Image (cartoon, rainbow, N blue to C red; front, side, top):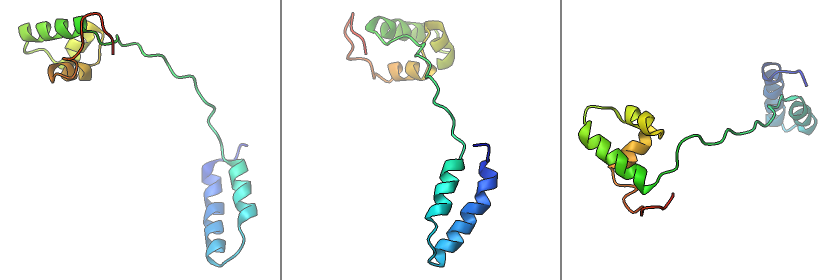
Length: 103
């Protein structure tokens, strides 16, 4: 399994040339497939940001109203949410949330 993709590239080029000439390249392609390195699956990290609630939405809007010169990123850090989420809040994406509800 130690063969790298760089070593397999010329074999792929040869297989393409053979295929253009009408040759059967099944064996070559199967060999290349077996030799290709594979990265093992990795466990995905769990989300660390807070879930959006009406309370967070209202607190962010209130904070923004009193701190117009603060960046969305800084506001997000203050509330442990993404800066993009702050932008979404200000655009009204979460205006339909009711107190006590989650998205």
